[in-house]
Image 1 (cartoon, rainbow, N blue to C red):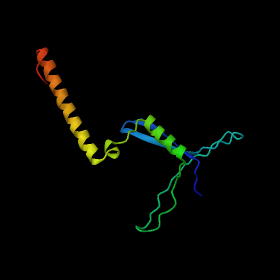
Image 2: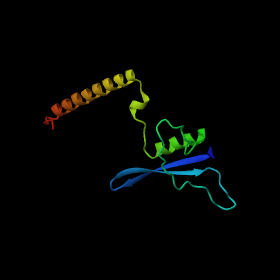
Image 3: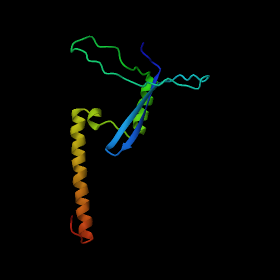
Image 4: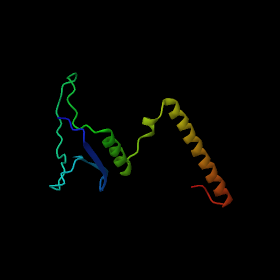
Length: 121
């Protein structure tokens, strides 16, 4: 059975070996009488042959659930990469702007160092 009332919450976990993100999946209906919620504990990987009919999805989120997942990822510090948001023309323009900005910063740094009679590092 496919659940459509699933929720996902992501939390950032800062560890010794680097940051990781923990995801919690749960059904968004509370059983207030028992003071309990339903939480997904295990997800298993299954091997399928290439070309085989696609199996049912592991989790299906509602539109609101997907938005809350994105909000949760954003709150945890996850941002989309620029390359996924731009067309090739926009990427080229973006790269040109970044290069111009970098050159401008270098020029400003040289001006400040010159004014303060400091050597460039």
